[in-house]
Amino acid sequence: MLRDTAGPPDLTGLRVDARSGRLLGARQVDSPNCDDRPPGQAPELLVVHGISLPPGEFGGAWIEALFTNRLPADAHPYFAGIAGLRVSAHLLVRRDGTVVQFVPFHRRAWHAGPSQWRGRERCNDFSIGIELEGTDTLPYAPAQYAVLGRVAAGLCRAYPGLCADAVVGHSDVAPGRKSDPGIAFDWPLLRSLIRYGLEVAPA
Image 1 (spheres, rainbow, N blue to C red):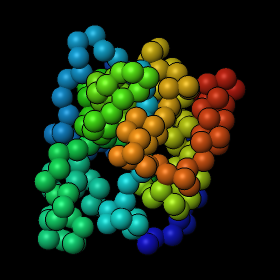
Image 2 (spheres, rainbow, N blue to C red; image 1 turned 180 degrees about the vertical axis):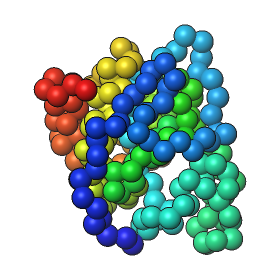
Image 3 (cartoon, rainbow, N blue to C red; image 1 turned 90 degrees about the vertical axis):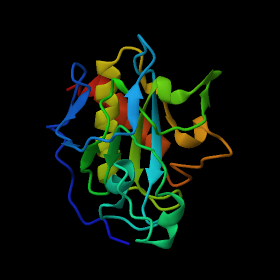
């Protein structure tokens, strides 16, 4: 497992461009695993995920390979069971705060699977999915919280239907099936960073 040795991330270049659906300042790697949202549907929910490939190991290109259908099934025993999946997320936030965008925000990424939020099913239809490189039980890196808070606040400003109260975990929309981002995730910290971004230091 790689240690988190990077300094604070540069947040100044991270801006949401609602017109293009892109996060400016993020590296762009297009995933084929997406499609159109239902007509007229804008983002109204932000789902936070946790991912590491292989499980518990950080760094490398395996997450990008999974989201672009290039994960070799024989590269690791764990990959044999997931190489055929067709999944994606809008963003991946690495341990050092580096951000990769796979799907424009106005399109539907395939991240939540069977899911429900407040009586509404098919959360992919109306949500943005952000993956954090990590596990359920290991603390996430400070750089990841800084970036996630900044991006979440920017998304709330860009999409009027999205608000700070509509930021949830994968476990909240798929309870019993998913547990990420897990018990190690600091929700009070994230909430405070989003509030700060919206109320104190809007970009």
